[in-house]
Image (cartoon, rainbow, N blue to C red; front, side, top):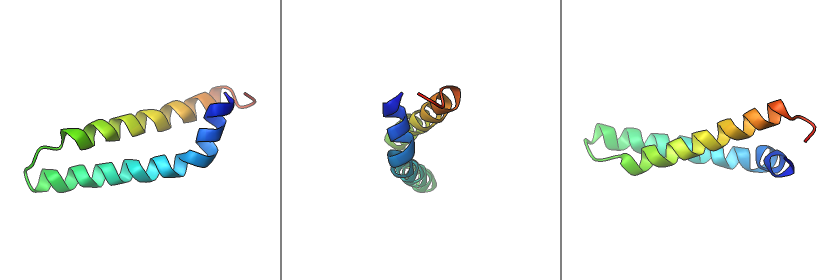
Length: 63
């Protein structure tokens, strides 16, 4: 649990920024009608990481 607290406090802003960048790159490729599978994959991985970390910290607030 300490690992998720560390990720939630220190790495979450970086993960959230990378999530937004992946989504913006996917939107840019959609508009240009190019394949965007890689961006959607990384966006999904980053979203799952954020959701999993927030959920675990909400369930176990004291570790």
